[in-house]
Structure formats: C-alpha cells, structure tokens
Image (tube, rainbow, N blue to C red; front, top):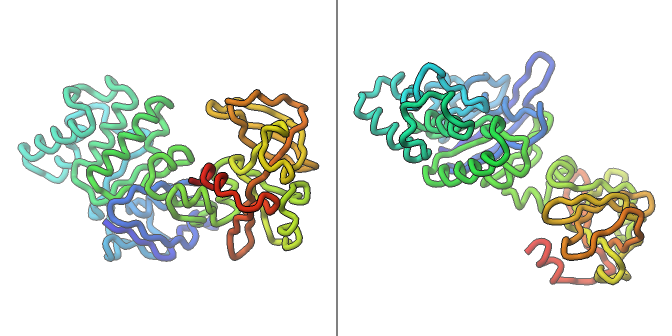
Length: 360
C-alpha cells in the first residue's frame, strides 16, 4: 500500500509536535522514522494509525483520503514497544485476537494462526502464556498478532526497545527478512541509528516536528541534506576553524557567514608521518584521546584550536595521548541554506584509490 501525507501537522496546545510534513512511501517498503526523542516520530505514526487526529494536512492510503477513518477501518497492524499482550490469553489466543473480533470462522482462524506461528518461529509454543516466554519471543507474538488480519500497513513503535542487545540484533534481521517475504508496507520508529541503517530500506529523519531528509541509509549518510542530519548521523564533528587544516585554502576564501562545515571520522587519516599518504597535504596535530571501538581505534586529535575525530587502523601501532601526528583530511561537508557540497583536499589532487576505499 502506498502512503502519502500532504502538509501534515499536529499541535498540542501551543506545542507544534509535527509541522508541515509531506512524504510518499512506496508499497512494500520498510521505512525507519529516525530522530531524537520528542522530535515527532511517534506522533506521525499515531496519526497514520488514526490514534491521533491531524490538526491540519492530509493522509492518503493508495490515493484515498483516510483522515476521517477510525483505526479499525484503515487496514493497519500496530506493534507497541511494550508488547501489549493479553496476559490472561495464551499465545494462540493472543495471535487470534484480531481475527476473533472480526468474527472469522474457527477453521480460518486456526489456519491463519498456525501459518503465523511458523512464520514467526513460535510453533509449539501456542499453549504457553506471555510470562512463560522470553522478551524476544513475546515481541514475535506481538508481530504475529499485528499481522494476523493481513494488514496493508504495519506500524511499529520502537519495537526492539524492551529487548536486550543480543536478541535485538537477531530480531532486526528476522524482521527485515519477514517484511521482505510478506511485502507489506511497514514503518518503524526508532532513535537507534544502527537499527535504522541495518533494517530500513529508507530512512526519514524527523527533528522538532519537521522532516529533515528522506532517502536510503547510504544516501542519508553520504550526502546529508542539512547540518542537523550531518551532526545526527554518525560521528561528524562541526568545524569552526577550517584554516587550521591543510588543503582547503580555496574553500576558506569562499566561505560565507551562513556556511556550516562537518567532517566524518572516515574522511580523516591520522598517524605518524610515515603512516599517512600525501604528507604535504596533512596538518600537524596532537592526540588528545584514544578509544577502542572494536574494529578501529577512535582518535580525538587537536589541530590548532580545532578538535577532530578520526579512525586509526587496528593493524597499526596504537597512538598515544600527547603524541604529535600527521592529520590528513580527505574531504569536508559544506552546508549553506541551498545546498550540500563535498569538498576534497585540493593538495592531494585526484585520488581515485581513496574514493574507492571510502565510498566504494
């Protein structure tokens, strides 16, 4: 089912929870609503579900206006972060609840529940009660219950928030595979960047009630549309003194007062002079902090009065706090009111090998 909103807004008193949001979601897509707490993500989800009425704007399902329709007539399934299972019902009865309300016949209900038990890997547990299951199993029951009436739209409000980290990672992959198999349009709210990048076909960044950017995880990461997206996704650092870096002299001369500059850690190479290519394009800095991040060392380095974050390979000797190092910035992200520019270090010249290694 295709979803469209036009100038969607929601006010609670004087507070603008959602402000003039328009987007289109194609049928069968798995979309992540990502942003800081209080940004408006759940309010958007609840308006799509019919649990909140928009202050203004329109919601269309397959081209039909649905603002006036109650939740039960919108063809949606809703999964809450706290499972919201019925404690007095066993797993079979929980999954069958929506079908029972619709007064389906018993044979049809059993066939559908059995199908979902297999799909969610819960077969054999149907006579247990929620308190007898693990957190991951309870969330699968919640998914199965939402899917039982064969909704055209599946809405998930932070579906993994109540689950421990290891199970959460397993459920992410399971959910992505299940949605792909079913082909149902799905939208999930999360504040976890890793979760959104790993699961979603597309990400919608919501901040202070506004849609900052919509695109694939790769598009949003590689070419953020706004300074907020650049600072929110990944570990970008805002640059207040570009003159401290080498290779961006031309950019310095073209800067205007409304420009904002960010640099991502993977756009920086830091190390002893012999470890860094293009030494003539590298500034000198001092290591201020080193943290082990599992796959790399994350290094905080100071160049002039500018602090930067860089990655340092585990295959190289660890850098020491206070050590003087070469700092090669390959690329910066430059923002103004109209566009986002990627500016390469001009002292390097064209280096296709680096482009392939970083963005390939």
